[in-house]
Image (cartoon, rainbow, N blue to C red; front, side, top):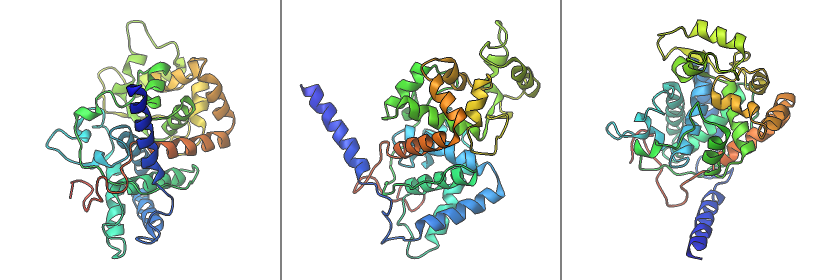
Length: 318
């Protein structure tokens, strides 16, 4: 009974926290927040395309560790979230996108120090998806910034490239995200790049090429990632339309062209294959599922009300 009550309390706490998020949160304190952030994000995008996948991945990594509280930005000696090896490949341009948007907001006297870094990241994520041709959507706001960031908190909190479906579902379910949500969010791999070291075992092993990998594609990957190549060499996640947010990712999975084991398993496992087929055949279905999933992701572990703070500098606590 005590355990049930604890679970009920936990559920109430989670729901009550994100229930305080709302789309017009800054209407009276910073009414132009969305347009100011969008202009800053667009300017950053015009400087480098990496702005798009970098920001999108940053949002995911932040929310899955300690919730969507911008704790990924904080420094803590060499012991912060961003120092963990799972976060060290995050693109600096993703961080800089938020820093630039924060500076733009702070240059407006009405908005100065009124908008949390966590909310700026959520808005910037929506904006980069739209810039890449993906759906635009309403963003719930009202998050506060966390004050704690530790390397240890990242351990076992982020999916790895070799995960199977059970491991993926378990990790996402811990944040209230369904298998469909997980498959839709995985579609973000239609953008950006990975590094040779992340998938080298699939193309070089004693057993040969991973049989779930399209052989021609595997041979192309071998050319781009020869033996003993620098493991940091970048390869597009989507070999067909790497700069467009579309459903090509799922069409690639149907052809055995998922770069990671954790990508390809979505098609090889019969439990998730129907959803992959649906998204591959219907871009609108994918877009709708993605908007639903990323909205739910944006509610994970949020701090609201008097919790946390609104940082004056995204990289350090007040």
